[in-house]
Amino acid sequence: MPPKIRFNAPRLIGKELSYVAEACKERLSGDGRFTKQCHTWLERRTGTNRALLTHSCTAALEMAALLLDIAPGDEIIMPSYTFVSTANAFVLRGGIPVFVDIREDTLNLDERQVEAAITSRTRAIVPVHYASVACEMDAIMEIARRHELAVVEDAAQALGATYKGRALGSIGTLGAYSFHETKNIIAGEGGALLVNDGALAIRAEIIREKGTDRSRFFRGEVDKYTWQEVGSSFLPSEILAAFLWAQLEEAETINTRRLRLWENYHAGLADLEAQGRLRRPIVPIDCTHNGHIYYVLLADAQQRQDVLAAFAKDGIQATYHYVPLHSSPGGKRYGRANSDLPVTDRSWERLVRLPLSPGLSTSDQQQVLDALRAAL
Ligand SMILES: *Cc1c(COP(=O)(O)O)cnc(C)c1O
Image (cartoon, rainbow, N blue to C red; front, side):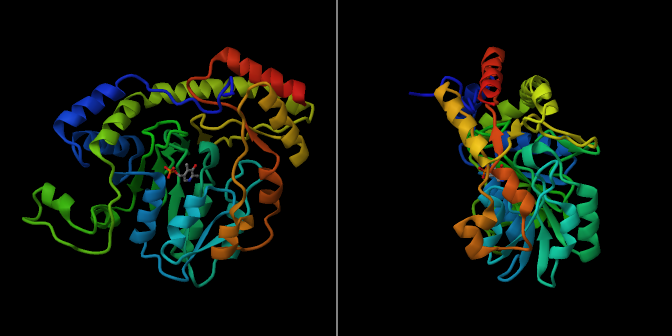
């Protein structure tokens, strides 16, 4: 039986299909009108030097590893509490993920532990903005400057969120967004690379276009395009960009709706937190988020299992997040933890993500709150 209340119910916002129809008449392959509109929108909204659509956030992270010339043995500092792509993108180039613990409050990379993980092989730091709440970017950027390291923001979840007024993804050397159907702004699959360091912009275009200078050729800057360096095909088709453009036009509406649901959960669970029955998400004062995830931290793994079972019985689809990479077979094979990761180990197994997507009605949301209360 399908769940009564789905964890994520992706929705079209309005013009997706008509824009896709337009793209089908005008141009199917990438970098047409819709892609350019998405690029300009992202550049204006984030203040980045160059935004480039990709076919996923994974692809954007792979482009980042290529752009930074990650070579075998290079070390990349990142949280263990993240999605596999954060690590895989660098492992594909022979890089070694070095896992650092997360903060108790935001579950983000603990900037106070980054410096201890730096060695002569360290090349980059990859902060992941979990649930679209920013990492402590000032401290991370300062460490990176001091040690001459690149910073790649995994901002997969964070379009529209800010840190001290700056768009997440636009602060580091590079940033990556996702438009996967589980994120706020969707295209089924899709992503973008933000090239904040302008010195990398031309090479980013080349790497994305099979290692050729085709983008410059289209702009009339060279009279033919040729193979310049290593690259691959990272760009999405116009069909996808057209779909995405309809979503970006309504990004404000989509994020506002999610934020309202997020705030409802937050208010509805205040008393349970006050009674010490669970912990709600913490959003530091310098951060605005986009309502991407609402999670609660329960007492222990057993209680989480009980709550998930109770939800399932009521037809409510809730879920956990991220088996930490350092404890996974791939993480052990390709990476290493810099130390014990006690906060990671005891956070992920207590975490439940509640259903949250624009299609969730307020009455469904009330059912989730009632079910959680009953289960506790
Ligand atoms: C979703 C996600 C990704 C991967 O995004 P895709 O577009 O599916 O490749 C990477 N990192 C984080 C933190 C994510 O949440």
